[in-house]
Image (cartoon, rainbow, N blue to C red; front, side, top):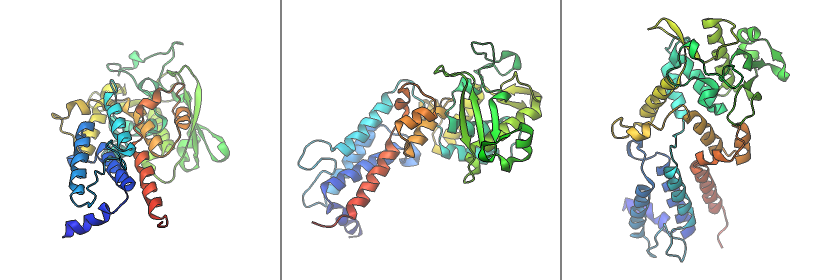
Length: 351
């Protein structure tokens, strides 16, 4: 009786509302909310939806299939859009999974006991900064095997590709410029940071992007991340303008090294396993999709999920083409939109 009592309000809903509910269920599964947080395919999600619809129909006097549109034998547009989006994402060649806020929170917890000059602390600051900026690997770190200072990757001018000390400018209230020394010793007065992108894939070399301090969340405060990055660099090598900023002290080798894709990928995949409970053997292929590029993908997904328009994402993450659209899943936004629609429908007067 309890199950029947719970289902009766559901089966009495209009067909359009049932369509929305099953679409939301598919979104829920598609965003990783399955058993043990395991990723499942669009085909499996479609099968789950079929079984749910079959079960609910047992309690519906009209024996409706909640997957189907009113008076139709075809899948409703709400559910079809979700399944099509999942298939599109699965078919993307060499796709990368996004670095997420949940992964960053886990990283911050790990780094609390880490010495400030060592790799874990350094990567925590860089991941926070690049999640907001959508940075490409070449813009801040070095490729595999290039950890020594003699192997710095250069741009077409013969300068380092990655950010250097002169590419970071701190500002106070009213966008007043602050010296680096003043900013580091008066952190609370720093409100913004200007970052110069030395070399970009889009050809807009020298572009300056401003980022703002956030008092709401220290873990995701990009200004704090940049202050830590600059402070670490000055402690380890001093005010050198010819070296990329992404460095750390290796206690085993007793040397200062560049951060490379090797360290980035290893930490990224370790966080994915911890947060999403992947099995390293069974989910080897999924885990391998978490790489340095996950920061750029994550930036896209976060902005889209928060309702930013395509042209805003394009501007904020420095794209000149529409290629960024391939990274967008739209699932969270779609879920919010559907939820709002249900609430709005519930507030409508009965006719």
